[in-house]
Image (cartoon, rainbow, N blue to C red; front, side):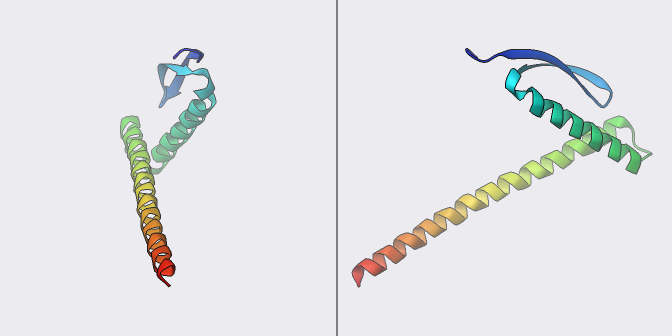
Amino acid sequence: MEGQENKHITVVIGGRPYPLKIKAEDEAAIRKIVKEVNEKINLFQLTYTNKDKQDCLSMVLLTYAVDLFKSRQSAADDVLVASKLAHFSQLLDHMLAQE
């Protein structure tokens, strides 16, 4: 990681500290994500009062995993559509060239 400044920070997720070694330019994004995760944990705790913090953290993880899966699926669909459009464009070009 030559030329990149690394930084040691500690983030608190669900009340527990986690030391991290990160790129300095990633700190703002990481802190924003940690804040969002903690907010989601708190929301789950308020919604599901019979669940402990570990259960709420697991539900947050599942929420992010589903969002990531949907995002990847959407990206794959976009690539497929772009490929089909390119193919149709080539077919049209070929047909127009024959006229």
